[in-house]
Length: 87
Image 1 (cartoon, rainbow, N blue to C red):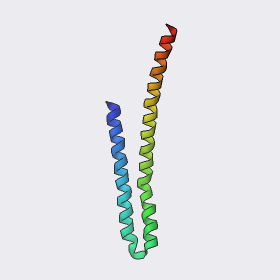
Image 2: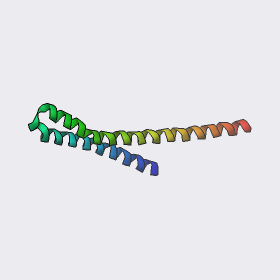
Image 3: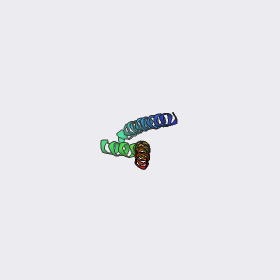
């Protein structure tokens, strides 16, 4: 049960990070638009890196959780095989 809550929290935070990246990019684009389109695009791209960093971070956590669950299943299967071979 705790793994499901933790996975839900990670997915929620990843979605919030996407929202943060989009909001910052739009905000900076609109604020920098009077200085030129190129400047606005670069500032929006640079500002969205904060949210994209967190998206990558939470995706890494999600991948590691999946690897852990797969390794736990593998260990259980190997233990069952070992028990059958020793009998």
